[in-house]
Length: 616
Image (cartoon, rainbow, N blue to C red; front, side, top):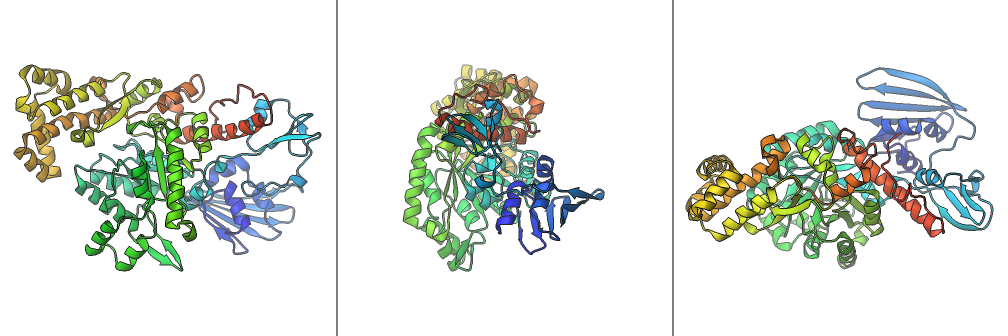
């Protein structure tokens, strides 16, 4: 890609850019929003007289032809009118430069800063700090003490992340299970040039299949991903999910809740692996969510030889593909998950990120990844609910950040208004832990919203009974009556009848096992409640509000505290793109604040921390 194309895409991220000179490139999309923000004059300024530039995005084409000191502009809408106009260019109009490219020698003379807070909030404006004061621009009088460079949200995180995934920002919206990370959420983020993962976990496969088809149709090649949830209780479901993703052309998956690698995730990663020249190309990308170094290492290393041999024996891989697969990591993007909602070890992010980064560096050296052009990235998740926390994650060295809990109260989230209202009232101390529905028998827990819900206590009571007794019949009559009245609101016999019918349709082997093993029957019966509580929350069953299982971490309370009294406090204003752009914008402001503070300035309270940014 030429420097000119890179410069264009840095500000106008169209899906396709073609110059009449033959130069071309591709971006993540978002042309209309970019034109609204910057106009088309800077594009025309990049062209020589007689040159033509064509930019395509889903549904629209923009064609600009330079003609002396002006340009002709033609806009063609796929489902609407086309129009042309003449654009006159000022003689000194600057062309857009690639991110970070600044020409200080040609910069205008600096002007004194009257409002430091406003100047710091203007991300595009460089500031010079001298012994004579603070100035807009870089050509300032006096002895230089420091510079505050321009910063954009595209400057945060790793450039390789944006390049490899075709996105405009190093931020991911995580896969909230049960379809809470909905199709609408994934599509909205994709159209804004950001990556989000559909929350496939816990959904029937036919529903996931429909989501794959809808996302593929609506994003038109833009960034999008799907969750691949480890299912130790039903490994066949994990395998069938991979089959579905491969058939649907899904190129990004978020591998969650893994304690060890499985043939399913390795099969997804290595599917279609091949050589292009001397470069190994693996079309499918895995994002691994981890909270332990030993799990992170499994994903950072090449797939285990035993699993590769198994896939070759099954005819899934050729011997040549096996050789190539042994030279790449299972995941190039490993997300360190701190104190997050849902499955979590509640580890402190500030301790985990440095440990996993050092582990990454050691593995990169041992495996020789750098020599093969492989970038192994470490992301950060958990507790990210305001600009300061996002800025801190990048300052720790995170290559990208992943948001979760804060997206659950957005308008696009696949949950109920009742659940959103509970989330919007949450504070940082309003979370607790309860049994995990998918790993109930193992004693695993998930972090959930405690304020307004009795889920953790009631599900915990069921787990105590499961540990103490070997069958439903062994439960003492007073305990049985209590849980039937307070938790199930039905008899256990009625619950089992519904549970048996569910497994008869889903997996008859599970039903046969339960009929032969009373303790397993007990587990499946209790899991009925654990599964229904998250469904009641998503559908907003008012008479079951006290049972809602809402996955949530302290980031939700942090976010609510940050937006209190601002335009982003009302739930209707919380679009997923608005929320995540506000977090990134605030983090970019804080990068400028750090530079100003390092030069000895007293920072105005309005920008430390900054309030929620609103798109103009």
